[in-house]
Image 1 (spheres, rainbow, N blue to C red):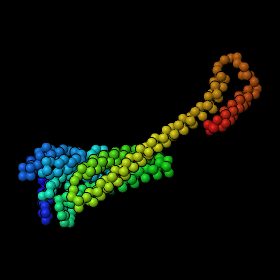
Image 2: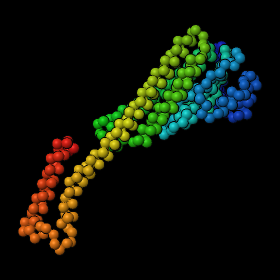
Image 3: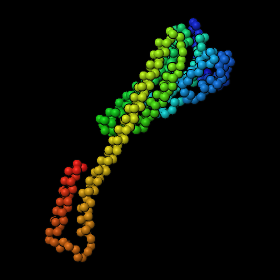
Image 4: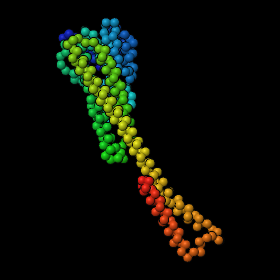
Length: 293
């Protein structure tokens, strides 16, 4: 476990990275922390939540985006990592397993533990900005491929993962939004908290747009694929319509009977060819009038 203690004027900040179960249990005694909340910290993939504990402190879990932009992930635990907050006016305790650079590089003087907590939450929300921008660009790339290049080389696998990541991110941010709506802060921190709420709402709407774009692109791709299949079937049908009567004529005159009409005609061969050509012209004119060709 890595433990960092920073002392500010009015409070202390204790940051715990990669703690073991027994180390978390020792934390419960001096700070009077409910052991059940420590179980939430250890649970992999725990979703954002807030719990106020009988006036002693407030327990909050939020998740920061931690996966690489190009990773193919589909679950909350793979996409993000959580930070648990124990906060009261006397101090702030943060607990997390993943290493976050913004926690190590967080600078400035904070008047109280609330402002420090909100600053960390702001950094956590900022981790979604890069992936959101990347996914928006990927949707634009897919759209250009679909509409300008007829979707010949679009990756359905990549589209699936981008949509899945956007859906998971939206779910986490919606739960984060619910947590932020329940946080109570001092009047001088209200403006900062409101800014976090607006940032979260904007990201939720942007991720919703990415999901809608992905669904539209997928439906368009499936429509183009169906159209190509229909074009192939149409072409085969046209060829079949031309050759079916011609094959019928050839089959008639290919029968091995000794006595058959027209077999002894001097110009029978040319009449047969002329009849085949006439039938082909008639079929062609009919297709044209029906706008099949």
